[in-house]
Image (cartoon, rainbow, N blue to C red; front, side, top):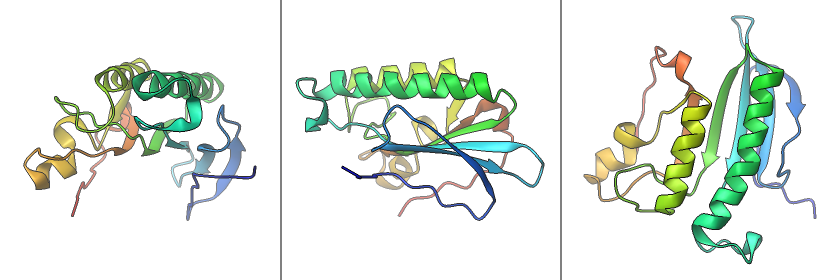
Length: 161
């Protein structure tokens, strides 16, 4: 009781918090940007292959179960704040490469579908994966930042060490 796995810090004003389906592993805030628009930041920790929290569900089934609940949060946020920019960030425990390094193929496919449905671009997966870049594709990133596709014009520096 009282566990909180995710936190969001912002130097910009937080104008409100939003309820989430999983108050232990997710958190959501609206941040006022200098442009006058708001940025919704949804922080998450999604299940890993051996995560015991969702037993009897394990692996891809547990991941999809948690993802679907969070995806409904994301849809609700889109409906409630259609002009806000949506950002998902956190430990997804799922790579988004061509071969599965971490997570499951089912989890990867469902995560890609969820991002496509909500017009989100993963800035840290697929060809933009900074971990794959420094490891020659041997390892892949499982911590991701996904942003509204409409914001793709924004210059983003990616890096890994």
